[in-house]
Length: 256
Image 1 (cartoon, one colour):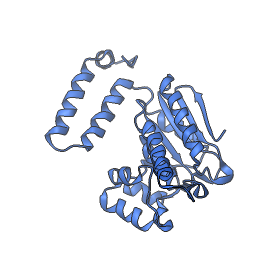
Image 2: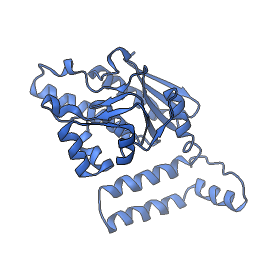
Image 3: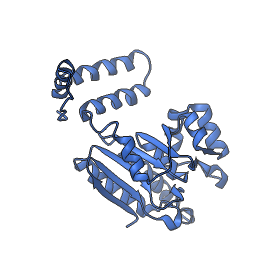
Image 4: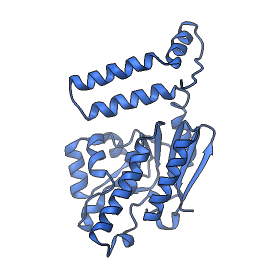
């Protein structure tokens, strides 16, 4: 199985499992990933950890051999499959983190950018090298990257195909933090421990306010924040959180 899905406590673990090919994405893997994300959405998981099998790569990108000798509509259908699959990940109602160790190139970096968060080991290397093949990113990279690092830096990466190391990626805002070397799942679990105890309703409202606000400007974004903040106050978890604060105890959130 090229994509493995397991559950460990509150976390769903999604692993790209093709280490002999640096976890390069075949179209069948995108379809398997899409099915795995459907199962995650239907589960009771509170967070998703995305990793790549083996010590060398998170994901080295698309399988180039599969991209050759395809017709016009086949190429477009392939791009839409990648976009649709990664969009499923981006729109999950629970937070996700990509643990980048080794290479994250092309479609691999596009997969990581679809996660809520990205963490990287010191050995991580990432980029969108499609321009070196006479191509451009097709799985959402040209849209997600500028939202993370800004237009000028996104254009530099996309149009030069340059590789970033972990330090530069963190400085640019492409990854949230650099973590010590370790087993990727454990690294992801440690990072997600900061979030899994909070109300999923509140986490969802917080992310929606930021994401929707990024698509608009000025007063419209503030209106979105006001609406979602008001909705948050109506939840059981908000009442529980405030009562727990006053009572100097740990809140018991129920995601309602």
